[in-house]
Length: 83
Image (cartoon, rainbow, N blue to C red; front, side, top):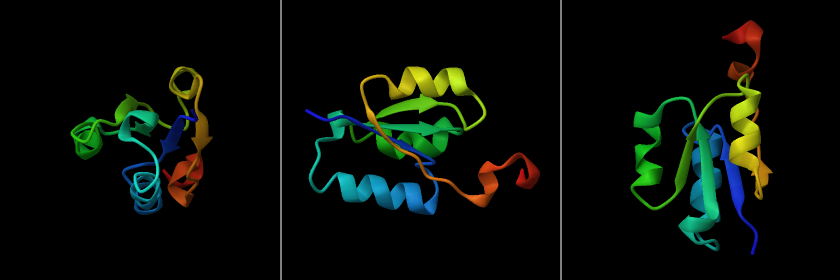
C-alpha cells in the first residue's frame, strides 16, 4: 500500500492535489506538510496526518516523508528570495 506526502498542501496546487488523491486513496494513506497548523486543520479533521514544517526545515521533511511517496509542490513563495 502506497502512502503519500503532499507538501504545500494549504496552497492552491497542494489543496487540489489532496482533493484529487482523496478520490482514490484513503485519508489514512495521505499526509501533508504545512507551515500553519490552523490552515491544515481541514485535513486533520478528515483523517489526514498533518506535519508542521516548511521547505527549509529539512529534518521535518525526513520525518514526514518516511515510508511515503512525496508529492512536492514548488512555488515562487518556496524560495528564500521570495519570502
